[in-house]
Amino acid sequence: MTAVAGRRAAVFGWTKVGLLILFVFVFLIPIYVLLVTSFKPLTEADPGQAWNLPQTWTTEAWRVAWEKLAPGLWNSVLLAVPGSLLSCALGSMNGYVLSKWRFPGADVLFTLFLFGMFIPYQGVMIPLVQLLVWVDEQAGLQGVFYGGIPGLVLAHVVYGIPICTLIFRNYYVTIPDELIEASRVDGAGMLRAYWSVVLPLSAPAIAVVIIWQFTSLWNDFLFAVFLTGPTSWPTTVMLNNIAGAQATPYSQQMAAAILASVPTMVIYVVLGRFFMRGLMAGALKG
Image 1 (tube, rainbow, N blue to C red):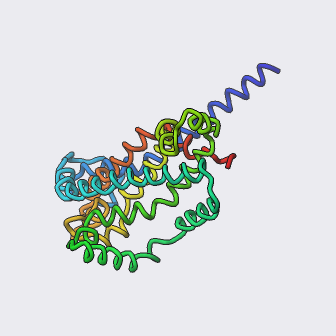
Image 2 (image 1 turned 30 degrees about the horizontal axis):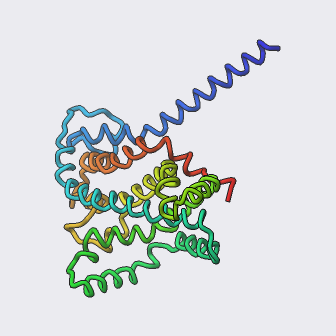
Image 3 (image 1 turned 90 degrees about the horizontal axis):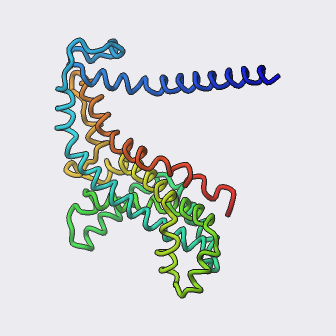
């Protein structure tokens, strides 16, 4: 009986490994097409030859893609880094207050926060443009908020407050209230308890929010088209503009797509081990 059970376990294990290898293979197919096409000259970069290895290997497409994307990559860094950090800070403070410092109407306020997650971008586009134009006029600025990166950061930070608050609030309810009470006994106030007790325990939730917001900001296209000008276009808009008038430069597009995706892949690799832990926190509590 033991031998039969052992054979079944072995068959199950090999089946699982085989399925995982199959899934990895399927997942890597688009990456293979991207890579081999990016090293082809324009004469070989054709959909009919997408699976073929280059007959002539060249990095010309990478050079051209980098020259075209470089300004957009820098603009995306200026957008995604401060936008992610600001969203993380605001979401953390909101989540802390809503989970550990109860006050009358806290649940109603939290529900109103959540409603912000369901407002489509298209529904606020016109009033958002009008608001940013008004801010520029009132501040005596020209093209800073409407037409520049600061306005795009502001739009994403405000739009990201509901989901960031939800993630942090769900994580903070898993932190024992006794820790907060002990800090109060030691004389810590609201901010000191947050800074000294709660924030050092927030790494998983911070990782989730940084990954979520960084990816959203880096991949944004709709807000970027409406709210920025040519000098402030991020990577996604620049990537969309890499197209020929008569023929599509597939090799340049593939190289540019890889360059544009590298930062988000790095973020996932660096912070990925915290992602599921922070995402599932509070799923069974609060």
